[in-house]
Amino acid sequence: MDGKAKAMHQKALGEYRLKLYFIGPTLLVLIIMNIFPLIWSLGLSFTNYSSLTSKQISFVGFANYSRILRDPFIWKYFQTTARFVIVAVGIEFLLGFGLALLLKEQFKGWGLVTTLILVPMMLSPVVVGLFWTFIMDANFGVLNFLISLFGLKKVLWLTNPHIALYSVALVDIWMWTPFVMLISLTGLLAIPKSLYEAADIDMASWWFKFRKITLPLVSPLLVLAVLFRVIDAFKMFDLVFIMTGGGPGDVTETVSMSLYRLAFNKFKTGESCAMAYIILILIIALSNLLIRWINRTKAA
Amino acid sequence: MARKIIKGVLIGLALFFFLFPIYWIVATSFKQWPDIFAIPPKFIFTSTALHYKALFNLNLEEMAKFGQAGKSLFPPRFINSIIIAGLSTLLSVVLGTFSAYAFSRFKVKGEGDLLFFILSTRMLPPIVVGIPFFVLYRALHLIDTHVGLILIYMTFNLPFAVWLMKGFIDEIPKEFEEAAMVDGYTRWEAFLKVILPQALSGIAATAVFCLITAWNEFFFALILTSERARTAPPSIAAVQGTSGINWGQIAAGVTVFLVPVVVFTFLVRKYLARGLTFGVIKR
Image (tube, rainbow over all chains, first blue to last red; front, side, top):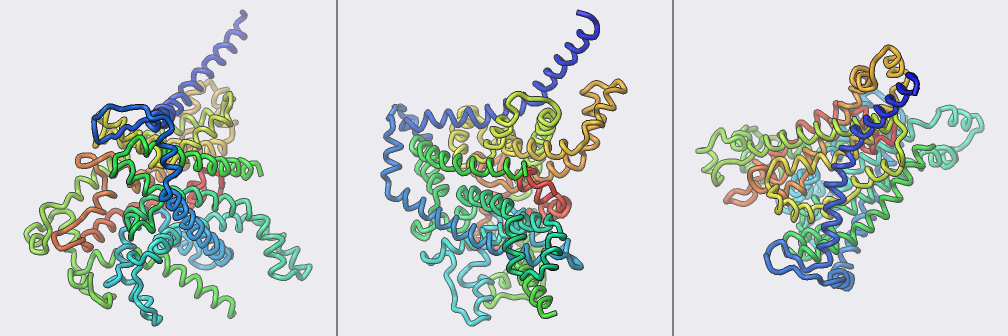
């Protein structure tokens, strides 16, 4: 081997080693901290293990899975979660996109206004849930005072079983409309002005420009925002936990909440692992959709 | 003109909707006891620092009169939050930057699949991984330890750091370090002395996002800590006096907890869209 080839070889080896040292730790952490626990819980999902008692663990096959899939309450909780996701994300989409259209043209103080609107989504959901509980208090809450100014009657925001779920959704809307607005705004600001100018020369109507220019060009980002929100809202736990704890009765019991109860109140660890796996499969399907969309958006 | 006025009104309404709740909780933290529960709510009031004093245990005798039992646990838990969020952020940003550099500059076998795998771990619902973590941590005696929570938050933020940093490093021209390597730098030196300084604002933005996520996290802190390593979010929620929920003190705790988040939000405002979409959006 002559000197040059040797140097090349050594360089390649050095590069290989660097690659290993640079990526290795990250992969190791993710495998140990994510994949290993998931395999562990898959194993537990076939047992009657309870983290509270030290009784003999025995293998129960698919009993946990079949019990969960036959449990009518679990289906109800899935429906509750779906209702929450549809209402919250639907309104976040409409409000967020509408707001982005309003803020499309810059004005004095534009930067400050947009940043201020973005503050809610950066806050801790549990803290947000906490102070909204205070705001929504039926007696001394400021929300009931504000609606009374419009002649509306007192609302039992968190204790009326017909309303509680939508009250929690309202707080989710408060937190995450800014996110949809931000993503839409980024899309709107990236549309070349020349397209609108060309349409103006042709005397195109507002509606025509909106349908033929605005919507097609921002829609990839809108889909991205909605997918992000659907996955997040589906997993939502903090708000329900702090605001209603699943109540009154079980009207705000989402799947995350009931899984928490199963694992950490009833301590049916094996059964909760089985339920976690059912949820996991749904989330993986949704995330796949999102990641595929991310790759498509990136390519564009 | 009419259109402009309608627009202004609508933007004003939006600002009110998104900011009033925050204003209200901050105002409440400065209200005296009876004013907090006044019907109708008081918009003009004489302010007091009582709740902040109580929060930081500065005025214990006074608080006893209002039914507060014992000392407030807020200061040690606030410090726990700082330690745990800070160290976990440091770890995920360091590991994430290294991996991002390798993914950005080297040919990695199965790069797409690896990046896909890394991102997909971030999508796991906390509650789903939380159950096995609880079992494992108990076996390993990691429940209620700083190390335990730091490890989890590091893992949680790592995929995010890799994706975001990869975007930032992709934007630094390859020619920079190639020129340095022609001048005799090794790849490692080029990384340290050329790439890192160039990527500094990206690293700072990534760190801020990791910091906020770890700072705000509630669920893992709830199930994996109880006393020693408990962070602020689960304890703010648990401030109870003998006379029901102590809203004054909760409001003060919430305010102290929110201030750093708001400050950091303004610091990274240029990167918000990018940060919240794992770097998919570049502006």
